[in-house]
Image (cartoon, rainbow over all chains, first blue to last red; front, top):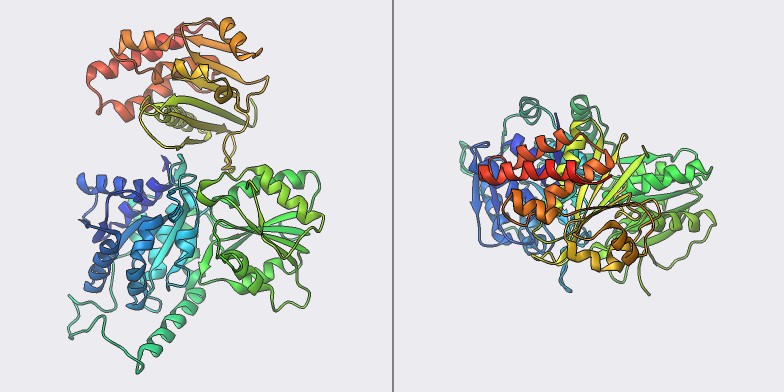
Length: 386
Length: 189
């Protein structure tokens, strides 16, 4: 069924159909309309969820950690400094191998105070042991949320997932979204079967034990192995979802890349705007292409290398800094290309911090620089006053 | 019709520019077209100038850049017409204006130094008479639909009803419907 939904409401719609046992949230800015909408579903009896209103984002993540450990399907959503305040417990969730699924609306971190589109929040969590999936539009927000449930809850994976969307650009933009029937989603996500649970296990269980230099390292090694399993199992779940939606979910999506001489790499809504620019430049006969990163953790190095191996110049768009170092997406692209004998030349572009607009002309300027072979080791900035 | 139609609404926080944009977009979707509706969030305060945008296309809409050159420009609050720089930003010779004002189209054209198509309707008067309050977003949407022919006005009323029938008193709800029709029929083409 086609519905008019914002990215935020698309996330809430997926949550309604998943019907989690427990959701915890702190209902104040920077919380987003995801929770406003989900609370409406709870209030009107459209879900069976126990919605816990807590006193902070740190507590929101703590509550879903507790619920998940107890054996419940637990979800939440956050954004910006809310995610930053959660950070301690974000790591607890992955360390305890709890399959929590959380929608994140990407917004800036203070200071200065700003709650507009920016990837600093989720990029600051890229090493926290969560699966990270980035969404181009509200349709993908909806579908990625369903996909994340399958990945996270696989007993060989058991890692939490974050599904990202751009603050305001995606979260507050109304678009047509094709929503599956409730019953189809119910069948797809299935009944939640925890591998271990405090409430339902027959044998006594310790969760959150102290592990010093005796076992901590081994536990962390297992988390890394679980990320490898995500890559191995990703496509079986992606294909299962494709059968229902008709859409494809490659870890990286190639757009006019096969004969491209130059390419831009992007994630989230910038992908969509870049596609418009690629179409226009292709119509002028320019050999440009786009690589979209959908799965950022675990990072699909081989897929990226294969997609970009024949491209001469690559520009990477980052909506966040890693101050004093290569920006997060750029660093991964550079890593992915290291093993190639003949490497593409790279240019890092930073754009859109704190909600600064990204215009098609900004992307076109970047493509034109790449087409003329104008790249440098220095970061470049799109639509910035200097 | 152009491949992509872009509309910019100017209003003040609380006047319903965002709702008008969303209702238009949803009405368009009912006709099987693609659409986007999004507000521009500034300080987001009641009474502060704000913008809302709609894109309409037969094809899937992919761009997320702000609307640069609007095809239609709707001003919901008459006092905003005085902010010439705000109103004229990105306007081209082809931009069609639909304005809420007691002034004549010629007077406003002269003030703005704009020579294109300007349609004017006194939507505040229509709103006060029909709804009882100065809530001019829906009559302005009625006027825009008449001028632009972007969507069937009945679809707009259908979506407005879906959203507001249970939220507004019957009197206010019916008043809005009357105001939409009065502006739709009353705008001078």
